[in-house]
Image (cartoon, rainbow, N blue to C red; front, side, top):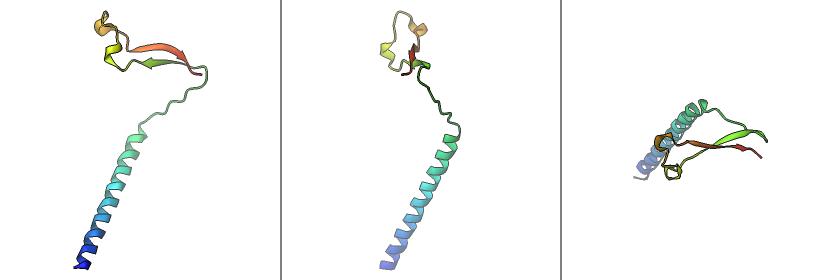
Amino acid sequence: MIDGLEDIVQHRLKALEKIEENKARVARYYNKKVISKKFDKGDLVWKLILPIDSKDNRFGKWSPNWEGPYMVS
């Protein structure tokens, strides 16, 4: 009886290791396409306007999606 339980535990541990390997493989594949951005002091950047409510309703769909430019300090 105890041997059967130990076999089940070992089987579950192997399954967990397999899941972790698959997650790492997917993360590696996804992160291959990510391009890191590096900003230096004094660079000008745009800020994305995320909340929809903060946009100016007078312009409708023509309201800006970005604000700025801001200087990196």
